[in-house]
Every structure is written in C-alpha cells, then in structure tokens.
Amino acid sequence: MAIEVFNRYENKHLVNREQQEQLLSDLQAKMELDKHNPNGKAYKIYNLYYDTSDNNLIRRSLEKPRYKEKVRVRAYGVVAGDDMVFVEIKKKYDGLVNKRRTKMTLSDAKQFLENAEIELQTYMNPQVVNELAEIIGRRKLRPAINIAYERTALIDPRDSDLRVSFDHAIATRRHDVGLDKEAVGEYLLPDDQYVMEVKTRHAMPLWLAELLGKHHVRAVSFSKYGREYIKKLKEEHV
Image (cartoon, rainbow, N blue to C red; front, top):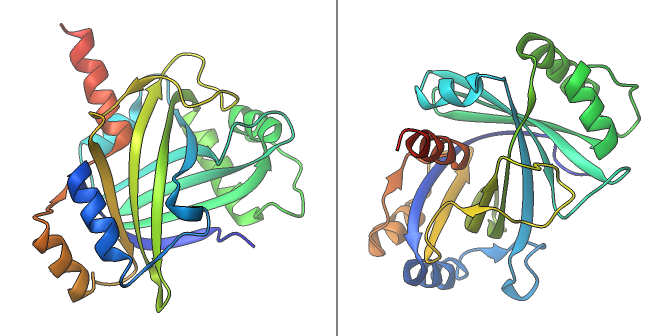
C-alpha cells in the first residue's frame, strides 16, 4: 500500500551536473536507488497545482508565513480518465512538512476539486478527502500550473525516514495544464542544474552533512511553483 501521510523536514539544494554525479556516486555507498529508478534511470513526475483565481496560495507561500498549504494532483506518467492519480495536500508549519494524499481516478479528482463532492471508494482515504473538501470549499480552487520533472531518488535501507532526491528537466506550463500530456513547457532551470532534496523526520545524519560539505553544497530556499510564479511576474512587468 502506498504511504498516504508524510511528516518530515525537507532541505533543498541547487547543484550542478558535476556535483550531482559526484554526490550520486558517493551516496550509493550508504543508500540504495529507489525501486522506480531501475539501472539509475530517472522516473517522471507530473504535478497539477490548484490555486485561487488571484494565486493566493502561492503568493502567501512566498511571504514565508509560519503556516502555508498547497493542493496538487500528482501522477507518475501521462494519465487520462479512469487512470489513478494522487490528490495531495502539502502543508508546512515551522519548517515541518506534512503531506497527506489519497488515490482517485483522474476524472473523479477533476470533479472533486471543482465542487468538493465525491462518492467515497474503498481505495480512498476518507480523512484526507474530508480535509481536502474543507480546503476546496474555503478556497474555491482552479487548475493553475503544470510542473513536471525527472527524478532520481535514493533511500537509506537502515533508516526508512531518510530520502535524497535529484530533480532535473523541470518543465512548467500555465496553458493546457492537464495531466494527459508529456512533460512539455518552459524549463525552470538551466540544463546543468538539479534540485536536490534531503527528506528526513529527524536531524540530518552527520555523515550526510559531511558529504554535502565535501561537495560545497549549501541549503537554499527553493520552491518549483514559487520560482515559476516569480519568473512569471517579472516577465509581465518587462
């Protein structure tokens, strides 16, 4: 069964291709590639973020409040109709990320996010559905942006709470934002840049902190959606 509730800290870093290759090699001395990365090949993640008509969720997020929330639909491939997706709430309070999600068909997800009504199925998480319905009713959300990328991830076989991922080829688009198309759009970062995330429920282990120091990698504040929104605002005021 897929995990539906996550509580963890997420530390983000921007690394170049050389750093990514060196880190990936060094990390594999302690960690294992995710099962979705056969032979080290990256897998694709497709996200459709929902927001208000005035972009309230992302605008508030960029203000760096103690509490913020995002709503998105996530798929691990191009989907349509009765294909399964995850509908997710991502909250952050004082640096701790709480992600809750439930399975739905793409058709059900579209309808639910429009009017907060759905017939519960056995594969759905009713608590998450109720929480989403409250947010949808309060916020009046709409599809806002599609963000897709390729991910290589590693897990620690001795500590299931530790995960490291590298995201690359981050493509964004605000037109035709459905999840039924390949990852097309404007690239958010140069081709030789990766977003590295360290996800853990506890403090970062000393060996990993030392490894980041060895490769001169520093934590940064970074949001894919936030970076795209700032870029959009700058382009509108040129």
